Structure formats: C-alpha cells, structure tokens
Image 1 (cartoon, rainbow, N blue to C red):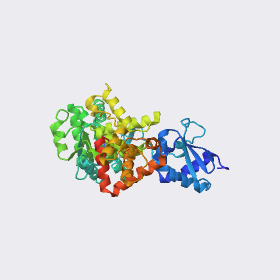
Image 2 (image 1 turned 90 degrees about the vertical axis):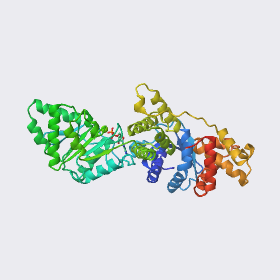
Image 3 (image 1 turned 30 degrees about the vertical axis):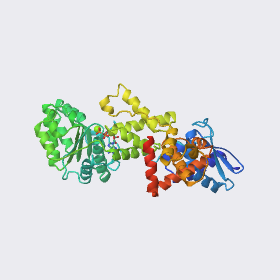
Image 4 (image 1 turned 90 degrees about the horizontal axis):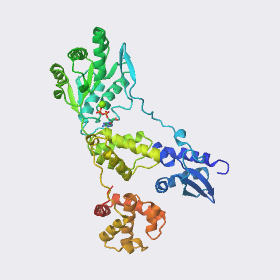
Length: 476
Ligand code: ADP
Ligand code: MG
C-alpha cells in the first residue's frame, strides 16, 4: 500500500478475485468500488451504493481480505464505506469493463446478407442461435430432437423438417441452429437461410426477367435450404409452381429442406397448394409451444449470463412466473431490467420487475394479447407482520424476540425473524440489527447464515420456517 497507488493495489486484488467469481458478478458488484485509504491495519473500501454493503459483507468480505493479505499481511480488516460520489469517470474508480473484457462476442447485426454460392444470397446466420444454447423443455423436446437429427444427418430421415408454433417460441432459433451446426461440421456446405418473402421476391424477379432456368440451376447448388415463416409465402400460381419444382429437385437430390410456419401444414391451405402441403406432411412435423415454468427459469438464467448482470434467483423466478406468452417477451423483460440497471444503476428486484410489468400492461402500444401477463398486485408485508407471525408461531413475546435473552427457545425464533427479513424482505443487515436492540450487522449475518445452513439438514426447522413464511405472506 505504501509503494503502490490504491488503484493499482485494487486492480491486483480484483484480478485475483476474478477467477473465484464470475465475470458478470465482478462487473456488477465491483464496478465503481475503490480503495479510499488505509489506517492501522484497516483497508477502507468505498462502495457506490448502500445496497452493495450487504452483498459485499455476505459474499466478498472474507475473500477480499484473504487476497489483500497476500499482498499486504499488515491488513487485518476491511472496512466498507458507502460513497455515492463513486461512479464511472471518478478518477479513483477502475474501468472494469475495459480491464476485464468479455470473452464472448456480442451479437452481430441481424439483417446482413451473405453470398452462399454462385448467384445465391441468403441471410447471415446469427451465431447465438445454436442447438446447444436452446434450452429444451417438454414443449420443445420433439422439435429440438428432430433439429439435432437433421443437423447430424442432413438429407436423411427427417426431410423436409417442418417446425411450427406461435410467435417468439424459438422457431428461428432452431432453424438457424441447425444451419450453424451443419456448417460447424462442414464449413463448405451450402446452407441457404432465407425468408419466404425473400424467396418469393427472387422467384418473381426471375420470372419477370425470364431467368427462371438460371435460378433453378443456382438452387441445385444448395445442400440445405431453410425457409423461415412460410406463412408469408405469396400465393401466386407461378411462384407456387416454381417453389414446388425447386423443392422437389432438392428433396430428390437428397438435399435437406427445413421450414417454419406459425401453423401446421394442414392449416396452410390459403397459402400453399395441396400438392405442396402434402409434400410437407410426408416429412417430419414438430411444434414448439410455450415452455413450462422450470424451462422458463432455465432460459432466463442462460440469457442473463449473456448480459453483464447478475439476477437474484427470486427475480428470475418472479419473471418466469408472470410471463407466459412467449420466450421473446421473457427476454424483453430481461432486457428492460438490464437497461434499468445500466442507465439507472438499479439492481433488478422483484419490485422493479413488477414496475416494468405494470408499465407494459398499461402501455397502449403493447397489445394485451401480445404481452400476455397481468402485473401482480404489490402486497406489502411489513416487518412487523413477520415479527408477529414468528411470535404467534413460537408463542414467544415480541419483547423476547427483540430483546437479548440467549436461551435457545428465544434464539431460534429471533434468528428465523432475521432470516425472513433478510431473504424475503430484502432488508439490510444494518437495518435489521437496529431493530433488534441495536445489534451489529455481523450478528445478523451470522443468524441468517445459520438458519440457511441449518434448514438444509433439519426438516423440522425447514417446515417451521416455510409455515411462517406462508402465514405472513412472504414467499420468494
Ligand atoms: P420465433 O421464430 O418462433 O418467433 P425466435 O426463434 O425468434 O422465435 O425466438 C425468440 C427469442 O427467444 C430468441 O432470442 C431465441 O433465442 C429465444 N428462445 C426461444 N426459445 C428458446 C429456448 N428454448 N431456449 C433459449 N432461447 C430461446
Ligand atoms: Mg422467427
């Protein structure tokens, strides 16, 4: 500390911390932190927001101390100090986003065209859409399995592959995932991904300029033809005819065709002629539907990792519970939470997500049927309710719970009350400590940890806590 600048010292420390925490966590919780000074073996670490305090005390204080001691054994304690003037641009603060660059690449612009063969262009495949990153649940198991089978053996059994389902349920993801997977195994494969609109336009253009023969020849180079959203196919005699021929030529040549639509083939009669529809029906048909709750949680968790944000489990579960119409909406809410965090530096909480949901359901531009959720009412449980619930359940007076008796019959209920205040009501350790006859935050932390650990092996305690939680109306 004496030789180095505080900034260098902090950077060294963070570099040692990084391997033990995820990068997203490091960015979230160490952005805008700084060493403010040191005195008599105490290292003073500045935090930009009060809410960081608890998190550091609970999760990083021990680790941080251990690491700084490796550099400077004279440090015996870390003291946190909230200083809201710490923010991006403050000279005391490290630029973590630059110092710890993301390893993963951010998404590419989606509209780009790519030339796949002589005279043929398609849309570029988004590398984020892979069959690995697709979270499988019971509602998409068949579609995903068929996609995998096609990717490992294009032109095999499942040809054509037809995937249908509502908006935002993962059709494009699966289609492009197959394309990406095939290209991974064989970079020279000619994979043409196109929309039915682009395909129609191409055919119409060729008919007009009498270059249909040329277009057909070009399509013969294709190994895998992927047409997304076939429901937009223009129902014109000549385009249908051409499409049918192209399609047949490819299938007969053992080439793979993959198609998506918002409805099953039998409901496409306004769009496609019978001949074409029955051809689809001879292939593999699979639907995608809205994933169940567990899968929604898994999707959110997977997507949150792509952003530099840490989401509390309760927040993830809350979003999964209330968004039921499409995966796209699910992602939309997540992105709003990310924006809120980046712009306002507000950590997403159940409360802030509720605000987003309420705003969306009020937004006249967001059509109800598209949004598909109702904002839950905010039920305000006061900590007083929790204390009373605990007091009732264990038949112990409030004075005893809040007082300083150390007999077991009182200690456990007291610790349970602290646990509920912390985990369900998001109260700070300091605040809880104050309510309990001015106890120190470390006492509260100890209590919360103890109950959390004990509940894992003690079924009786677990039941007690769950019952109280239900009775007072808090549930994560
Ligand atoms: P569709 O083409 O059916 O309208 P998309 O494939 O565009 O839907 O999916 C919308 C968004 O949801 C995409 O960002 C996609 O990656 C994501 N998504 C959908 N289903 C899943 C899933 N099962 N696992 C992971 N991401 C998914
Ligand atoms: Mg799509």
